Amino acid sequence: MSERLYKYIEITDLKDMLKKTEKEYANKTAYKIRKEEGKYKEITHLETRKMIDALGTKLIEMGLKNKRIALIGENRYEWEVSYLSVVCGTGIIVPLDKALPENELKDIIERSKVEAIIYSKKYEEALKKIKNENVGNLKYLISMDSKVNKKDIYSLNILIEQGEQLIKLGNREFIDAKINKDKMSIMLFTSGTTSKSKIVALSHQNICTNLMDIASVLDINSDDVFLSFLPTHHVFECTVGFLFALYKGAQTVFCDGIRHIVENMNEYNVSVMASVPAIYEKILKTMRKEMQKQNKLEEILKKEELYKNKTMDEKKKVFTEIHKMLGGNIKLLISGAASLNPEVEEKYRNLGINLVQVYGLTETSPVIAIGNNKYNKIGTVGKAVPSIEAKIVNSNEKGIGELVVKGPNIMLEYFGNKRETDKVLKDGWFYTGDLAQIDNEGYIHICGRKKSVIVLKNGKNIFPEEMENLINNIEGVEESFIFGKPISKDKNDLKIFAKIVYNDEMIKEIYHTDDKEEIHKIMSTKIKEINKEIPKYKAIKGILVTQEPLIKTTTNKIKRQNNLENILKEEITL
Image (tube, rainbow, N blue to C red):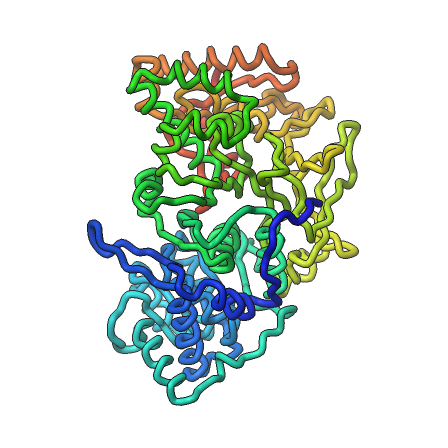
């Protein structure tokens, strides 16, 4: 458990958060949106809160008090306003994955029993069809993009205008609504097929204690600019990006897409971003490539070695040119949702770029541990945040066991699923399903998912993420996937294999070939070199080399079972 390093505003619920922070940050910019080249729309924190009050007031007037309301769309301020207008006095919010296919969207609307859905135009045709089929309890379709009310479709903008009028006429039903901080207010579907996905029930207390914990260990203030990139429906972006930015009075800007991240960092003078390891790996490769073009890479690498033991501030001054590539204002990069390669983390920090890891799950609202300016150790996820107790159970001789945690940010339950809830909540402790070590200084080392560990016949454990990090360090490799497969009649006698996804452009540039057989030979040689450096039981016996990306969730987390099912159909050689 880490100590609190910074002052924070105490809040009981998200409505309380909006009220208390409004006094502090009313005239600060909450959102900056590009309208056209060089022209922007700015929305203050006060204006944001007024929109939330207006929309909430109108939703209650429409009969949606205490009802479930779904939300789907790309990252935008209307999504965030809608979320808070539901959760702060109207009903229960059900954020949906924007990548859901129509059949799964239909199933979730039925399972969650939502009565309204707020959406962006991409989903309109599918939702009209679902409503016409009388699926579940769905009554209202509310469009974030429509400027006028159409047949059976409400305009979000008009609802906000109507809510403003209701407030002027004295309607205070939303504004004065009392929040039960311990009751389910957020329903989150875990990733996976709809039939298998569980519904995580979160309360205001779960989220707000997490916000206060994060604020107490990260040096973030109202002058910071957050780049919103990861899908907002995902609890990592929702808590650490969207809600935390509003809580701290910071400004949020929205990314134009994966290819525009660095460009947007420069355009908006971004200081904070929460993203996934794959993005940070991509940015690092882009920076290295640029340095190579300018014939400066060798000089940079020498300086990295020379200054690696200096302070972050000293390194920042030495590598000003690198910082300018990212806009020159980067203060904190947060990596989560998957394992970050320690070498990538070290390379950023050697350049004076403050990249830290965060660890958590949907069920923990999400942050369990995070690195910061004072407590950061490369290869770890930092220490548990102040409200969380963490311990290891059923550990082996190396101290590796399942990480279990206790604290006010732990979910209420898997909604309507006592059997699954009882599997993970035992005597107040949440069993994360992750294998970890906690060192004598309190730093948490995540080894991998318990269910992903490959157990060999000799009893040795292979952590796929650890092996994948080694492969991902090979120049030209985009990503990789480690799996076990029997090569004899004995199904328990597993051997280690790898799927390697390469970047065509980088392979051409580095190895001067686009011949698939030649690329396979190159990768085979590289794997043999890795095999020499690792214990024999970990040796990779065969590889599958491809440009086909791995199957992942919308936050770039590898779907292990789906990938394994696909891979085992293919021929694997070394």
